[in-house]
Structure formats: structure tokens, C-alpha cells
Length: 105
Image (cartoon, rainbow, N blue to C red; front, side):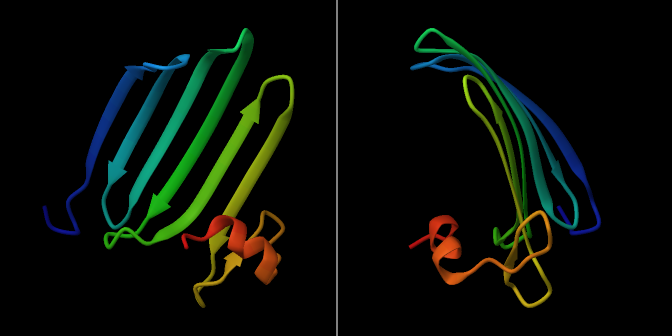
């Protein structure tokens, strides 16, 4: 596949260890984007998660979005700027301590 071609795939599966189902759509073009939803019951508690991950064609992460709802709720939204620095949802540069939580070691 050349970089000008695009491809879309829908993947669905049921969790083996948790009582959940996951639906993810993977779109490939000039980058790779995975958008997914997880719903189910974990330890007797209903939960739902939505996520989106974008990587370039070399598999470098460009952006991450996670929305989680259960007995607690939170949203994480991060993206890289043109200088390859991580920014939060307010376009604020992450401090070194915050970056270490999200970067691979």
C-alpha cells in the first residue's frame, strides 16, 4: 500500500478475562488512526471507554484520547506539536514529570 491509498477496517471482539466487548475502527492513509469503544462489566461494575490513537506510518504516536466512565470518570487527551513535544487538551506543554507517565521507558 502506498501512502496515498487508504484502508479502513472494523474489528470486534469479546474479552477473554473481563466481561467486555470492544469495537475498533482502524483507518490507514497518511497516518494510522484507531478509534474504539469498550463496554461491559468488570468486577460487577458497568464500565465504558472510548479511545482514539493516531500514529504516523513509522508507528510514532501523534495523539492519544481516552474517555472512561464507571464508578469514576476521567478523560485524557494528549497530542504532539511540531517540535515533538506533548501537549494536553488545553494546548499546555506537559512538564517533565507528567511526560514520564506517558512515555515509553
